[in-house]
Image (cartoon, rainbow, N blue to C red; front, top):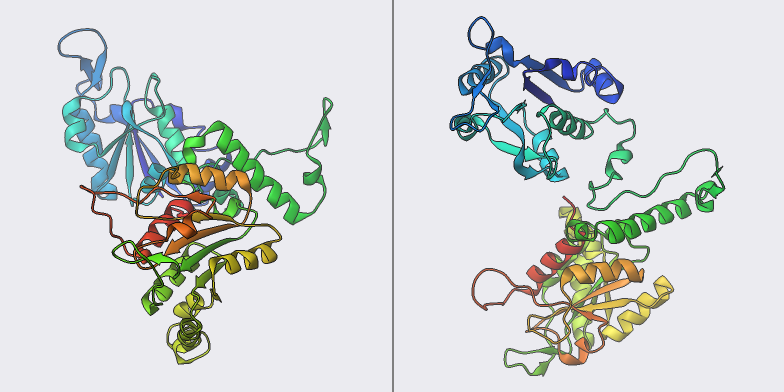
Length: 419
C-alpha cells in the first residue's frame, strides 16, 4: 500500500501516522504513507496556496498551479498516481471503493480546504471524488484519514487476525455481530450465556444469527449485495428437474439429460458453496446415463485429467422425482426444505430475488433451488414450491430465453456471490 497525502496542514497527520495499528504498520514497512506540504509549492514569499473565488460570494479556492506542482513532484518520485479528492460532492465511500483504492500501486489523496479545489484541476487531474456522507467538514484531512485507515485494514499483517477483517461489517456484505468483554455482568446486564459456554460451534452459530438480525433490522438494503451462504444454518441445494417440464409449445414433457447441464451446473454448485446437486428424472435409463457420465469424472480417467471437474460431478445425487429429493434433504437436515422455484414466465405472486434472500435468512430452513430443463418447470412443480422467483430480465425488449445453465449462475451469484 503506497499512499501520498497532499495537504496545506501536514500537522493533522503526525499522530495519526505514529499511533496504534497505522503507526505500527508504517514502522514495520507494511504500508508507505508520504505527507506532502502543499505550501512547499506555494507562490511568492508567503507561499500562497489559495485565492478568492471568481464571482464573489466569499471563501478561498486552492490554486490549480500549486496543486499541479505538488502532484507533478510526487509522480516524478513515485510514478503515476490514482488521484482522489475528498469532497461532499463525491460518491459515497464504500467497502468496494476502499478495495479498489487499496489495489492501486500509488494513490494520492489531495485534501481540499476552504471552498475546495479549482474545478479545472479536478477535471484535468482528479480521478475520483469521494464523500464520507451528506455533511460538510472544514477540510479533506479527516476523510483522508478515514480512507487510509480503511485501506490499511486490507493489507496482510496490519490487523493481527486475518479473520477479523473477513468478519468485519461490509466485507461479506453483512453487518458485524455484537461484541462483549469482561465483566460477564455489567450494571445488571449479563453477556449472552453462549459466549461464556466455550462451545465454539454454538458461538459461531450465535454470531452468524446476530449478524443476520442486525443487518435485517438496521441496514436491510445491504442484503442485495451480501453473500448469505455463511449465515445459513442449514444446507443449500440445487434440484435440476427433467420432468414434468414444458416443451416449446408449453406442453408437459420429460426432457433428456445433457452432459453440459451436469458439468456446468455442478461447477456452479462447487463455486458458490452448495451442498449437493440433485438431478431428478423418472426415467431409469436416464439416471443410469448420469451415473455413467459422473463415474467417468469421479472414479474414471476424467478425474485424473481434470480434478476440478471431478469435484463438480461428485456433488451430483440422483432421484426419480423432486418429491423424493425433498424427502432425502429432510432426512439429511432433520428439517423440511424451503423450495424456491424458478421460471422464465411471469407468474402471480412471484418473489423479487432480494425479498427471497430476506425470507431465506429469516426462515433458517434448508434451501432447495429448483430449476427446470426443456422450456422450464411445469405448473405441477411450481405449485409445490414455497417461493417462486420472478423471471430473470435485463437488456431491452421482452426476449427472455436463457439456458438453464446461465440462469443457475445468475441466481446463485445473486444469493451467494461474494466480491
